Image 1 (cartoon, rainbow, N blue to C red):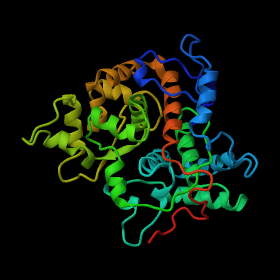
Image 2 (cartoon, rainbow, N blue to C red; image 1 turned 60 degrees about the vertical axis):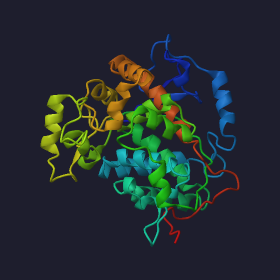
Image 3 (cartoon, helix red, strand yellow; image 1 turned 30 degrees about the horizontal axis):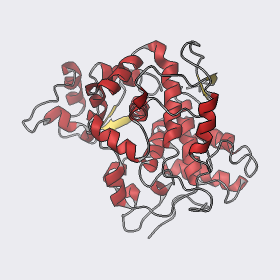
Image 4 (cartoon, rainbow, N blue to C red; image 1 turned 180 degrees about the vertical axis):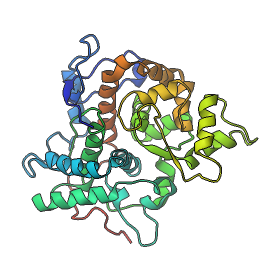
Length: 354
């Protein structure tokens, strides 16, 4: 899939201000949308530069010039061998940022099985080896300069772009944490069956808004999920052996065929419309009650998130979505970061903490 690279600008979104994004620097996407919807918000860009004083665009321009292109080149080869890692690396970054912040603590290992990666929600996370491979190449070019956390952020951005999604600028300057606890992953990662109230609370802890939440949920437009993640919706929604009534009946039947009770390890795409392309197919699925995860289906049950889903269920909204997604990813990338003299820059991302 060829990446998209035409520039667009942040837009004033016509929903209530409580779920409008915090706009960062300009981003890139597939095509410039109507000038009615897209403007350059210079003041917002300036304010964003103060949102996380030690993160900045082009942080490595002097100390490791060209590192982002180096990462991108390595990823292109990795995705050629395994295109499914695009979704894997996006999820890896998300799961890292929601526990202790974007500090690469998810990469850390434990002899005793007590690190974040050993927590139940992380057992199916993929992409560790890809990050280590990229880190090895980066270390040869710039020893002990570029953090694993920044490589993960770049990789997530490029994973989206190589899936025909937007290419946006990533703030860098993160340092790596050296603490990784299984229990924190269990308590900080949003549940796959959460409703909008629950999900909004999890995101708020990371200084992310409801708007960020409904936008970042669309990362599910690429990738798959295991049947065990939504089996309750199919076979025992209320404890009476019933199916979730919000699930479109014909699609529910299709899912039971793909996920019989004795094959919960099977996987299904989270966006059946366009499985491997970063687009509006996710919102189309949610709008038509064909979302796989309960947390995705729940977006229709709230007036604000439901309004956004409805707006995105239209091909003309693609650039709006791309702009919003870039903003939300940059916002998430600021969560709990270590900067300055905090944390460390390590040679290997997956060192052992015990």
